[in-house]
Length: 275
Image (cartoon, rainbow, N blue to C red):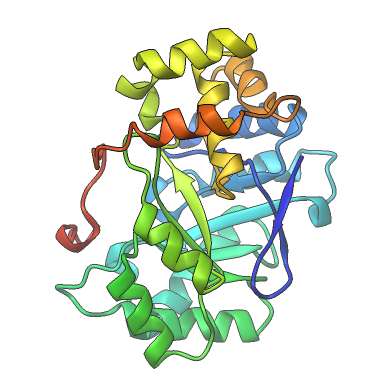
């Protein structure tokens, strides 16, 4: 495993396991399998409804808590200072943990204008030692600038949709300049179009790897933390088997040409759904 160091000195595994859309009743076995496959970063969220299942997998694992990196997120309808503190307590209870390694705001929801006060609740949680790091999801540059202008603690992470068809070049540059770690969800574009892209398939053939492995390797080489999701054990093994090869500069350039600003998920400024 490779690690990145966040702006507060905390080390985060560069490749983790996401449980978006994994039902709670399946989450325990899925996370258990992920831990057995050497994943140590587990990414969940309050809105996913599977924190209990994730917590049961952690409790039943023989991996020490200190070796795990657990992320969860405050859901949109629980934003606001006091609501966020209560939501965090509920997440800890469901996870069965005394602390999480990373706590994130799930969406900025600019229309509702609560993300600054929500982030101030995250700052309290961080100062109390109950989250080792805090950050945001789906934040554009304007949202990050406001947080940095009105809050005390710089976000450690910005988790956003990112894949070869949506490379987030400007956002990556901004985050790099401000020492905010970019983390990619839907890194394989949910297994859709990008996996069939001929450039990706040709590179995969050259290295004797799968398209998914090439894409994940591309993420790693662009200094992004990546959290692919699958419930299939063989694909879990495939996704983590990306540390024994390196893409050439020319192959990285070929993948760079695929950017087309194509999203599978909502535009951050347009998602104001209180869920």
